[in-house]
Image (cartoon, rainbow, N blue to C red):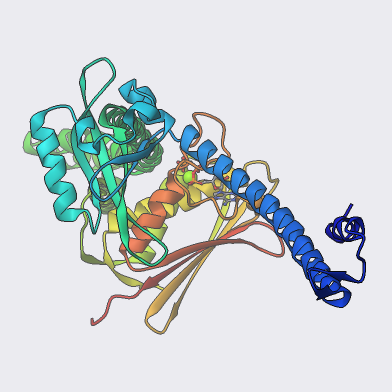
Length: 451
Ligand SMILES: Nc1ncnc2c1ncn2[C@@H]1O[C@H](COP(=O)(O)OP(=O)(O)OP(=O)(O)O)[C@@H](O)[C@H]1O
Ligand SMILES: [Mg+2]
């Protein structure tokens, strides 16, 4: 029954449908109509209120679930420091529930008189701006004073009036443990990196020694052969001179001269001595080169010819490789660069070595090294006829420790170190795949200025 039905029934029960308390029926109908409207408005308000209530409950539930699942402790307090709300973590930490905490002072949560006074002072002085990462001891449920890293943020009402503050905190022990674990991991990583760097250096040293040994072998065996020949010649010359000094007759001397092939010996001497000197010089050059290589760690700033460095790198690496590895060089006689020739040689040797590793399965392995000078820059291109770099690896080949080689065959540091060296020389190194196949590494370097 609606409101108007009820009103009409009351009206009919009076027995005077036309007139009641001297008021006309029309007027009554108006009143009933108005009451009807008010009643339906009330109903609508009730429905809206119920909806709002449901939403409010939902958001309260949400806030509660967030507060409950927070691992940091949280306290909401009024302007005077009176606790209004806490989360589950704080209840667990203090061993007290919200009911017993509500209405008490936030300062009483601190462990001793000194920290309570410090907290009061801090909140009074910085309450308006907030307090960040301040370490103070709180009283834990077992009576211990546990250092906690405290953050305190002021809270405001809808019109911007300060309502108190929100205090959050995390026990420092936990932070310290996390920090120590992080530090340990960092130290381990650094140590591993050092070991790998060392391994990379040893590997490149091994390649270098193999190349140098091969290279030294040639002039040394050359010198040795010459010296043996000179020794034999010296014996023959000795015999001949002794005969002359002993006053042997001229005819016998002539016969001895022919027998000991003295004329041929004298003719052979200059080229033998020349060859020996050349061999010794060659050895000296190789040792010079080695000295330069051993300066790898020093950040030198010297002017050098990049062409020579490339040629030496090619010579040293290719000595240790298969005979059919063809390296075609197209280099201008002079590429003046300023920096460290030793470091640059490490870059070049790694590029040649990588190319050689890549073409290992090819029938006719080839590497083209072409350098050009453009304005104030030199560009060196290394193009091999291997399988190229897998597209998905292109972005990673310069990453430290990125390698596709089997364990023990590559540390993945070659290109990462090269990248750093080229950067220190104010240059750039890039990689791409050639449309006709094979990888292309391009190095761009600024030329040395002046003469
Ligand atoms: N010329 C190339 N062709 C195809 N892939 C290449 C070539 N050069 C380098 N790569 C790829 O880049 C990776 C990284 O090369 P990088 O020189 O940094 O390390 P590595 O040669 O694997 O090991 P390391 O040089 O330390 O002995 C290689 O493992 C290889 O997958
Ligand atoms: Mg390499």
